[in-house]
Image (cartoon, rainbow, N blue to C red; front, top):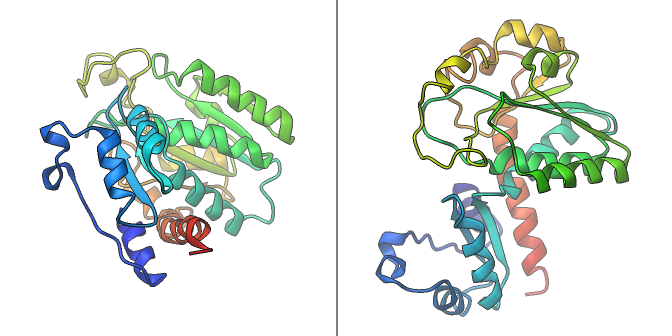
Length: 267
């Protein structure tokens, strides 16, 4: 949210922040009414709604009635702005994304049951830039079948590759970029419980110095932040020389400005 508010200010515009406590949604206002009214007040609407099974449907309902663009700041299925910032960062770090070995890896965390939107957006976008993408996760943390099939199709059509493994070490080995990040088991288990007996057996799914050595000195560590330090990743990795998380975070404002400028270039 802050990247969009700051970006809008840098572009010479003004952003108004609203949450449910400041609106009538909690009193039953429909997505139709919200979108219709807010679209008469400005040039675009940016919305985040991550509740499983509801978020993307709500954004699409808003888009149906809005007369201005709806920007998805994150929903239960997608986080397009994070994926764009990730892409920009890799384009800055490497001479080409073609055949870049990128591993999206599930990592242990206990803070909350996180959305699948970040890894899902990454597997859909990265193969379109001819990357060799590996998705690694323990059994039970699957992404939707339709997303997997789309990722394979994008890889086939654009000269990259896409594969799945349940072996963390295999995903780290010789990777150019790693994204070790937790996501919830929403597809298989829709309980909101964060810690259960099964996840307690997965504490070894952590980005450590040992894992980074498997990848090699050229490998970059990336994360959407905030990271669950000590669970998802060791401090020595996220604060180490292979980490580019702050460059990645900064690129959120640059990609936000680009998207907003695209939508209002003729205003």
